[in-house]
Structures are given as C-alpha cells and as structure tokens.
Length: 248
Image (cartoon, rainbow, N blue to C red):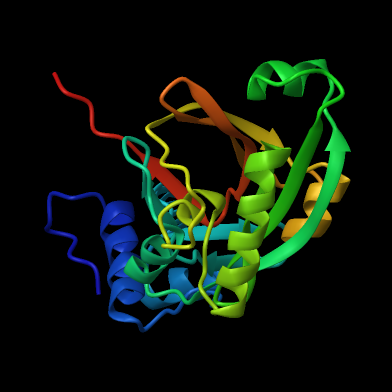
C-alpha cells in the first residue's frame, strides 16, 4: 500500500510501485498493466492520482498507451552513444538482444548530380546501392540504404555476402572492420540527425504503420578526404534511444 504519511505525493509513490514491478520482472515488456479502475481499488486513491502516476510513468518511458486499448509496459530501448561509432552486434548484445542482418537489395544505378557531389564522382558514373535491414530478436529495427562508387561498392557487396554466409550481424560500417578484405579504412564520418514519420515504403520495410516515428541519420563515410559511402539510416523510434555526453 501507499504511505500517506510520506512527503512524496501519492501519484509519485504509485508511479514508483509500477516502476518497481517493471524492473523486478513482475510486469513484463508489452504486458498490459492493471486498468485505472483496478489501480484505484487496489491502492485506495482517486482516479486523478492514478492518471497522474501513469502520465509520469509514460514520461519516463516505462509504459506506453494504446488509445482505446490500455496501457502497456514499454519494451526497453536500445541505447546508442552518438559520440562514437558502434558495432551493430555488440550494441544489441549489451541490451540482451540477438542481432541479425538481411540483405534487402543490391543494384547498380547511375549517379545523379547529388550522388556525384556526395561521392566525389562524375555524373552518370555507376553507383552501387546496397540496402540492409537490421533485426533485434527477429524484429526489424533499423534500415540502411547505402550508396558507393562502383569500385568501392563491388567490394562492399562481396563483404556483405560473406558476412551473411558466416551469419554475422552487421551494418555497412562494420564491414570495414570484419577482416573481409574490403581494403578501405574509414577515418571519420559526417552525420546529420532528424525525426521523420514513416512513409509507405519505410513502414513496410520496418513493419510499422505509416506515420510511425523514425529517427533518420544521414552519413558520409570518409577515408581521409575520400568519401567512401553515403548512407541513409532509419531507426524505429520505439526501439532506439540516442544519447551524448557533452563536456562543460
């Protein structure tokens, strides 16, 4: 029961009860928590108190509401440091997830003006386009859409096929470091970050509804001054949490 002599508000105490049940495993990810009426009766508090507690739990990312259905325990998000480059497999392993990668498509296209500038090649040069889908526990969580000059792309395609044969989870960045004889050593990456709603083809790839929140990262991978890769990455908003440490 809640302690009415405690200086902490009842709604905060109730939120802490919900939090404790989640962290102890009594309430599991994606499991529905008791209804407002059940919480009112069990803890002898008002409906307003219950709603305040659930609002606070939602703000902390402990639960998620499904309109017309109920409130559910939120699955823990994959935490990724923005200040460093992260190996896809090790990032998932730290969260207790089993990672895997699917090669969605490879194709040779003709460079347009934008790609020619990004990859420092000529307009109408051949470009290798490689699409990967990253999975966590068999659920699609990230989509990589990469472009390479044809020379670099041929080696990256071969490396991706080798990694798939070995059953190694990977992103394109990992391919440079998996001893797959790519022959290139990235020195730095320029990136931009923005929120985006899922358009139809992204919703289909990531198995979410159209309009679902995604986190879009565009990257240019360099070896010294030479651009190796231009990549658009789409992370599911319900699966990833990004953080950065800033020096004061």
